[in-house]
Image 1 (cartoon, rainbow, N blue to C red):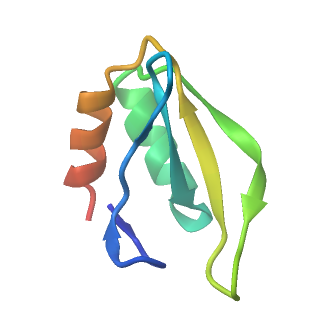
Image 2: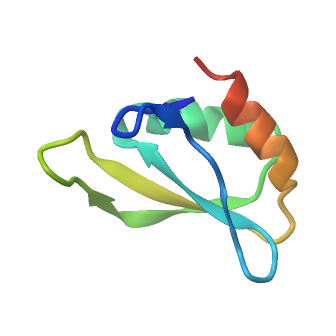
Image 3: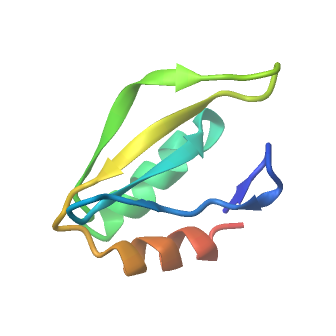
Length: 80
């Protein structure tokens, strides 16, 4: 999956104690949820949407410390 603002792949920001966080375009929320749910990845959403400089809004997803961060990154990388 590509970050439309940076035109670079969406990558997971590692957590201090495991898990991680990623910023996802709001327009792809349902797709990402389906992907994570389909692979039983434990996560939760930030209730806040962020938009800067008139760009499409993003929201945060936090991955549980029990999440396989490498698998999640592979899943994200497989998304067009």
